[in-house]
Amino acid sequence: MLTGDVMGLLAGLAWGATTVVVRCTALNQAPATHTLFYQLTGACILLFMYALLSGQLHFRPGVTGSLSLLFQIFIVGFASYLTWFSLMKTYLASQLGVLSFMTPVFGVLAGMLFLDEQPQPGFIWGTLLILSGIVIVSGWPWFITQLDRSAARRRRSTGRNP
Image (tube, rainbow, N blue to C red; front, top):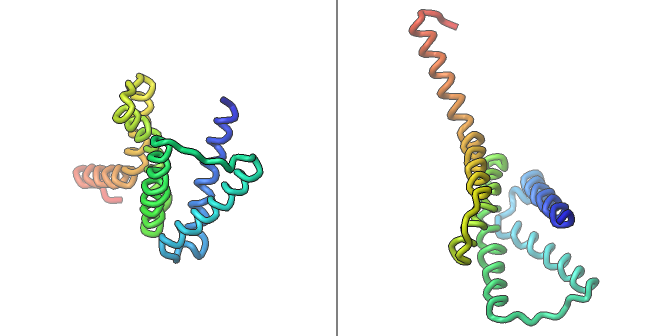
């Protein structure tokens, strides 16, 4: 279990590093298709080297494996990353980062939809906490604006000017 936790932390670190590299280098000016091509090419080279070194070059998927692979290629590896890199060129990474927090929620919801899994109380509480955090982070500018307006109304009603 600890190995999986460490790998999860490393994956998060790599995801953050990717965002920083894309936003702070010439890739920020490149089309999203080029960024995606570089990302997938690098991953292909690294994964092939790992497969070669670990002796995992055999590949015999069945129907389920083939469908899973096609889903990973076209939806995860192509459509979602192309969308992500396109959005990163338009919006700040901090604004988009909240979408990443929804990933586990979407994964569990997909399990409930496709695999007939039952939601656990921990999932429901966790989802509520994630959504609360997203509302706070995304709505913070709006909250500040509302507080400023409220303070200005109070000053006007008491006849005091700042």
